[in-house]
Structure formats: structure tokens, C-alpha cells
Length: 241
Image (cartoon, rainbow, N blue to C red; front, side, top):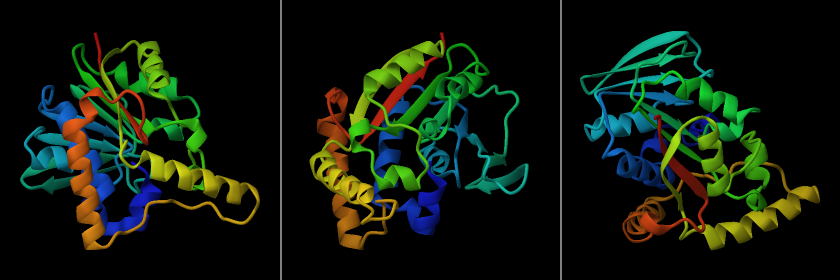
């Protein structure tokens, strides 16, 4: 996840519509393949690992992030163990999360292979990335993104890493038209020097937050299963042969 956005939202990240909705998608995709443990790459505070634990989809988690201040720290979360580590040299977890990670690295294939090569055969990797380069704006500049992806590009990357695509879909499709217009306007203003780069994600009042969560619950139920056309985020669930 984007650490800069977590810093902006603070503790409200756990109830913010964006992270709640993304967590709903993650659990939806992983429910058929959930296992005992998860390796959460670029995990930040472990928002999504904790979401999986809350719904009994995993029993323990290892969260890795170079932003951590110490090499290793153990935390008990609702009677379950989370290990926070700065790096990983080997992995036996059957499930890897790479949520909003690959867009931050220079060589996304090298990073994806590094983790996918370590997991056992039959293990799964779930990836999410920001979608469509034409949406590039100060939001991406602020978050230090290197690129955005189409679903086809993400799936080619997955195949190049030696993984098999199980399912690829776009999400946040209902918001796409509005956000696309806003991003294009902001990019023009940024290029003209009339706007500074910053994240588009902000704290929401309770009513707006509730409404957006409800909208995306509906999207998950009625659109997600067939949406390979448009969205703000691309998801890919992959399996190691």
C-alpha cells in the first residue's frame, strides 16, 4: 500500500472507503484460495493482512516493507501473529499480497519474480496496481509512481514472471468517469505550474464515506465479475504452476 497515503489518513485508514472497498475486493478474490499464512509485500501497517485475519482467511502474516524502522517486530493481532520485517530472503507462505507495490519500483518484473520464485508450487499472488497511463497526474508524482498499467499489461507481466493468470479485473469503475475528468484537468494545471503534486485521497466525512463504501459494495456484486474494460485499479490473481 502507499505509505504516504497511510500517513495522510492516519488511523482512519482502517475505515476509509478506499481501503475498505479495496479490502472487500481482496477478500472476494482470495476466499477460494486462502491459506494459513500470507506474505504481505509493501504492507505498511498491515491493513490488508489484518482484514484477512478479521475474516479468518489467514491465521498469521508476515508484512515486509523497507519503510519499517527496525529489521523485525512481532505483533499480536486478535490472538494472531504478525511479523513486520524490512526484507525477506526466503518464503514458504502459500499466498503473497502485492497491493499497490509494483508501480513504485524501477523493474517490476524483477521484484515480482523475486517473491513469486520463493513461494511453493500451487501458491497464489494477488496484485493490484493503478490503471491507465492517460490518468497520470500529480497524484502519481506525489506517490512516486513509475507507471500505471492496463489489465493486459499486468497479465503479460504476470506471465513473464512464470505465473498463470487466474483472474484479472478492473475495480473502481463507477468512479472512473468523474475521476478521469478531474485527473486530466489536474494534469494540465500541474504541467502549467498552477498546481502542486499531491495525493487525491483525503479524509471523508462520515456520510460520504458510508455512501462510497455502499457504492463499491454494489460494484463488487454487479460489475466486478465481468469488468475487464475500465476502472481506476487493476487486480490480478495469479498462481504458481
